[in-house]
Length: 593
Ligand SMILES: [Zn+2]
Image (cartoon, rainbow, N blue to C red):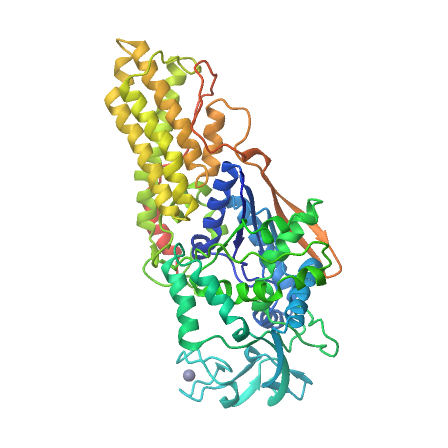
């Protein structure tokens, strides 16, 4: 029975370019996982979008004299281009600035309110008498009361690194007009996490046997040491989703509260765009459905505690408020396979200091599959890892080209030349032939189970190991020599190698989709392994956004060993990968910093 599987991918914030750390941390793992499940024939959905609200965007907009909408749209466009070039097959990549997301977020808020998991409380907040408005902490600068630094943000000092109590800031001034703000009381809604603590602990304990230890440790640890306390989920800001309560004009839902709701709203939007308005329930209300959240470790509390709390707290009331006829409980996260951090040449990645490998830029110099290969091989699944250009160069030449690319190319080229583009008839297979094909066939279980568990490095390593086995087989069988004396024997080993390569093509496909697609065509198949990505412009009452979509129809049910038939016609092959020159190492290092 096909399963319903949702890859909920971290929402990139709409004020910075995407770099290798983001790609290895969340976006590429999700795509590999999604492509695998589509090949398996499961009901796979991968959703995300641009996180478009919040003060980092409004601060930048004011600095550049643009509207917040213009700022987020600029980065959003870049995201869409990058995802298409790198082959990140979101079924829907949308934005939080949509009518649909407003409605879903406000319904979640109202459901939590109705169920008694919201309360109001007053807090002190900066207020600008000159502008007659409350100012978010980031809008106020002053002198750090700890180290004396002159340009400290009111909630954090960049010189001494301390988190600051805004009320104690010395000589506060508004970043907008330099005027002096004052502290005033403002009222906000708080999400009552304390009231949901029992549900969350029970939920986390039920995942103990298979979650990554770091994710469990962080989540349960936080609850055990501090307990869960209410957190404010509204802000005095007009760039965001209005609080759907009368008398709350000028306030909006806080970004972290609404951005996580995006996983749900994007699934709903996907259904609407495909004329299946209730389809989302299959991933969100069916207890066997599996939802997995692909994020970096800095986002663990939001996905392992706060989002499950929102889902558990909203319960059946969401259906009522959202206007559904059916009612059902939400499924809580099946897994949160959060990654650690990727560093660059031994140092922490920093986009603003240009210590980063930016996705769109690096794709102007390298093909997507070699980048996907290297990113997978250094994915920080259990500890921080490092992008190193010398390692990139070696892994490309010594593994991707030498072990896999050359194997496919030399076998197909030799077969094309000596059997005129027709798969040779092997006659009876020997024990060695059958042993090799048996090993490769088992790869669909061994590689598959690692993919299923989101052990992507191990899965790729296992596929590469099988490619090495085929190379060893060919070293022994040596068809390039036997053909001189016994063409039938050479044809038999070439057939076996081609069949193994045909299977490896599928085992590598989640990681290396572009070259697997090419190889599929070289092998004479007329159809495609994967579907097509496309964009669509959508206009609604909130704004206009371009959405990235994917038509997956083609991939279903292909995760199985090759059934290559003797006599099948195939094409003249071309190399799948390029060998790199060692000079790229210095060139690339020269671009940093
Ligand atoms: Zn300081």
